[in-house]
Length: 312
Image (cartoon, rainbow, N blue to C red; front, side, top):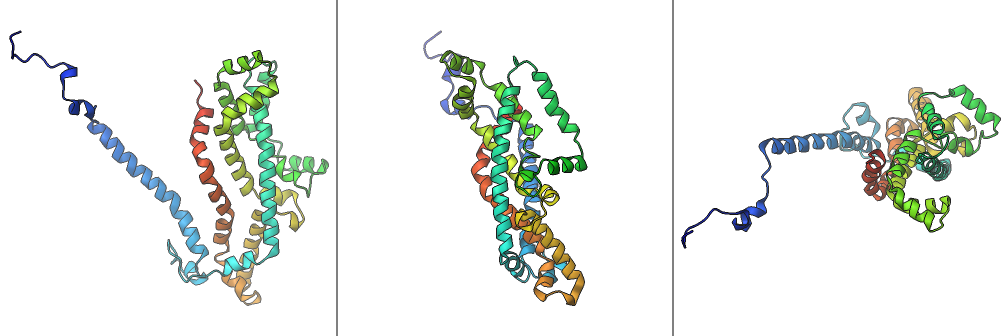
């Protein structure tokens, strides 16, 4: 080639600025991004709107609520309902019960679910199919309300913490998610641990569990939310008011406030004024602890669910 003649440009000879730009997104991809952003924004708005409305209702007077004027901003700022609920010593007793029930029940559920899931993840285990079948069977069939009540009563657990924390100790969906996660761990890790002389329990505690922080945190969140919001089990098996969780307390308070409102002049004025806001106050007070804990666990949430739900 003669000197000074420009030859064909190779990829290496292209300007660096052009190479840095990379592949330009297609028109269809840009449309997808725009639609995705709009849809996710609408989902966020739809999710937040009811909660903001509930908070506004809990801080509003009774008259604007009845008139349907409360939307996202409180009308006639009023803390009567909060004062009535939080001035009752029984409220704090029941709130403490809820914390105790949730902590104990979550701890028991995590231990049982982890042990059961770890066993089911071992394909060489004899009788593994039977154990999986027993767990899956309970997802579709249950003994019913009356047999469960008779069973809990005959075991002497009625009017005790065990009636709340033991009947729902293992959630089969959570069990299967954790089982899938354990199956995704490399088998070579446990084989190396066995070569080093670790027992099955030592392998679980020293090798498997430290690698399972994401899925365990996710299961803690699932179980804690479930037990914190649960009220029917306690309502069914507990007869003493000092043993109630806060959800049962607030459920009874809603029923009492509704009755006071229908009674009119017979009820005290404070109770009548709080009748329209008591349900909103109930929701706010029961969700605040979960909202406070969730930001510390949410970073494990997505990775934990994905690792436990996808194998390969």
